[in-house]
Image 1 (cartoon, rainbow, N blue to C red):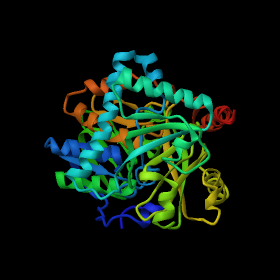
Image 2 (image 1 turned 30 degrees about the vertical axis):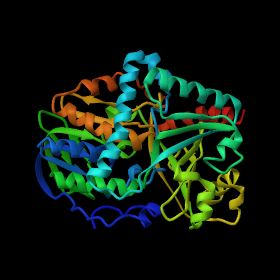
Image 3 (image 1 turned 90 degrees about the vertical axis):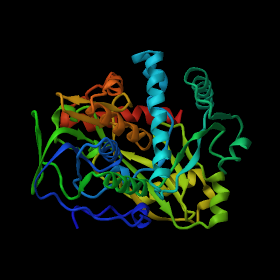
Image 4 (image 1 turned 180 degrees about the horizontal axis):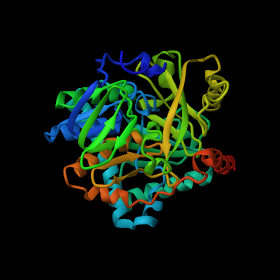
Length: 427
């Protein structure tokens, strides 16, 4: 088997049957080489192959091995930064264009699940809980701005704790925001479905084929341990797992560890008593809790982050404590699975897309919004390869600060900065 097996998780245990892909051996040529077989890379591969280009996708481990196969499965609206910060940087008109692009990302998920018959438990409905009055006030403002400034009318403010319980059975929130246009899915099964769609369109996928060197030029050459790809264009879609392969973009993102637990099966009635209508839920805090139900009636609960490469100690105990803070009635319930992985964040909490030279393109730093935005990111990169770069150029106008401290000190510097936000969550 080429590549390291998927890490143990509920997603791995419930993954659909999927083919293995060979390791790259020898030299191959293609119009486009894509590094990374996650959502972004596979979305780009689908779009490029459907345009008639020859595409090679190389993946260091297995399809969906990184964040695309381990994340919380939450399909969110907009950007982690908030629309107002994008307006301040680009103006209202371009902020509206970017919001519309992000909405197209959600539409791509819906369309691909239907067209390619991807069995990934796609469900719509999302509740954002507020546990402080200032958070509820912020959600009211967001609701009004989304409707008035961005034409998005799928949100509804939930004003009281009693109304909260029509969505989620918890005393944690005084109110919140319901979003009918956001939702959730089984992330690994969605990614495996994208791989099958890419292969059916003609893309060649190689697993266990880590890129170990990139030589820029009129033809880009990408070396692996046993092979080489020569391509007219290169798309970098490794995100938090790209490492030091391309130093030009390394400092714009920070890999952050995120962690999730899956309980044992709760039974249909008990599960539905916790979360109504099978929606996804999250709170408003900077270090947030997010959770949803699985098809087999487990609670999938995420709520830890780390700014080092080390797994937090006593992860199941810490995660369980957070879960009981929301649902104390689950005191008799343990996690059957706990797992984690890395997402890439940017300083501004907006996606980082662009180009290096004339024929190397990249997308990274989705900052917690990757399930929704990666599909449109792959499409935008494919458009740029085909000579239609207007949307890529718009997204690339978003400014991105290099993380301070260099390779050695940027992690502790970020950890200190995050302490301020954690303290703010407590106020």
